[in-house]
Length: 127
Image (cartoon, rainbow, N blue to C red):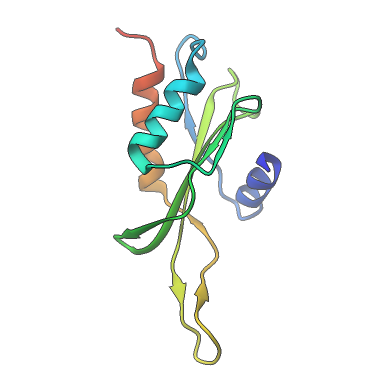
């Protein structure tokens, strides 16, 4: 699933938002990341500690109207095996002919930066 997520993001020229953690990930990084994601988005749809993948289900949002889901995963492209965040947004598209359908998901850069900042704070050692 992670490979599909990465391929989907990269095929559109989109890169996940990095979460750099000074000094490497703490031993309880997965538990901390899980707590942050649950606090920010509520329930989780995917919890895979072995591959370090956390993902929320699609959650209704009002600004802009649509649905959003967030994923946190270990980024194999990062130099220090840091984490990455992807926040996707989709909305209902109403074509001139046919039935309404969801738009293709797009990255929500502002929501990614916000989630990455909260994760960075939770995972970096105290100063």
